[in-house]
Length: 296
Image 1: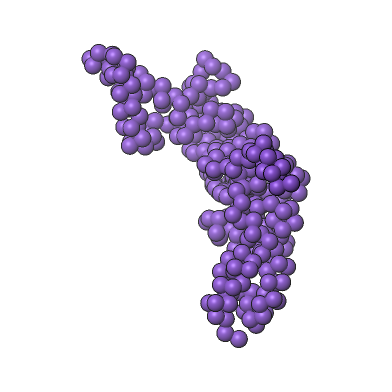
Image 2: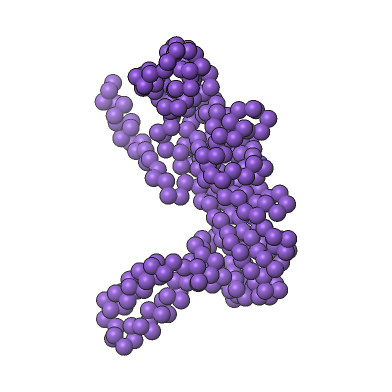
């Protein structure tokens, strides 16, 4: 039976599932609308789709390393309650292992890959979890790093996975050093490894702001430039890992620590803080109670 656009549209409106899922369900059921709905429900797609517009800003970050490959991932849930659930934590662990072994290029590719031992794509397995747990969940992001032989990974999870860090160091195999620097990144939140990585436009904008601040403070123009350069150095200390003060020894900078350890180098790092950049819905409990009172 030919599947028309109007049939796909109707099924999509009735289930909230995606267009391609609806079309595939109709094809598999020979255009039978009710059977297509049941099929989407069986796969957990219909129920998951209805929750897909709900904000999932909680969850966990996870890190795993196997040989020369490391993976860091963020999987989101709607509530911290679910994030603390053992089943959710195990699922995040399984996703991380899946990514580590399959090495997809992006989230879309990962969701289409057969998930370990199930024979079903990760997207379908995730839909089933959403249907079972009753909350929207998503694989938000991940990054896979591959290191050289004379390098080492450092990993760190803070607050059980609220913040995750994966770092690669070169010219060393000192795992303790790598872990210390992963903790540094979790605590001090650098954006770059070193000064030469700072975006030129970002630096210029910072310089303009600092110049305006100094002039507004009434400082003479002949000393404003020196003040700005001093404050730019402070800015570098905030955003560049190697310029930061080492959290375990306030008398030492990270770059000095690296030098003491055989001139080790930071190749790159990834820091995930769960929910960063996601606009969270803030519930007003008082207003909710008042609204319910008015209905009675």
